Length: 114
Ligand code: 5GP
Ligand code: ZN
Image (cartoon, rainbow, N blue to C red; front, side):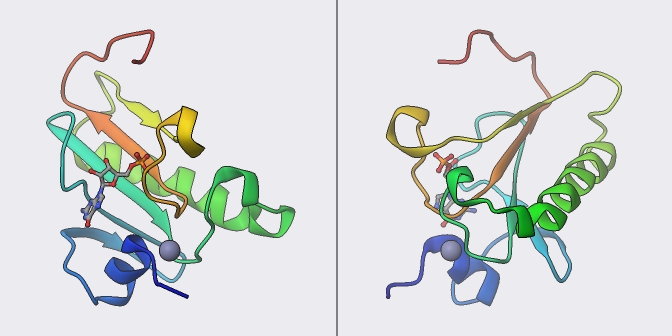
């Protein structure tokens, strides 16, 4: 099976601007940032989409939320706010089929999202 892009960043096969890492998750800057702060928070476990998240993965998901908060604080986003985005499959705009949360901040976000 061909390893996905984010698995390659996690394993160090391709370079990523890693901002945070522990045994469950890694966070790195998006290669094509859509805001002054654009960080991807990614489980180390290869889970293709949110539809593949199982009950046993809830510890990973809850941990991701705490890391999102931590990075938002570290990046100085907590007072003004920020956006967290998770895209699922084609209509959701998912390009990389390895679960990831986008943390976007540093500018006013539009709504509805495009
Ligand atoms: P999606 O559209 O799947 O929700 O988001 C995938 C994101 O991954 C995009 O924002 C894209 O810019 C980012 N991305 C794709 N390939 C790479 C890469 O090799 N390195 C980094 N840092 N980001 C990537
Ligand atoms: Zn993967």
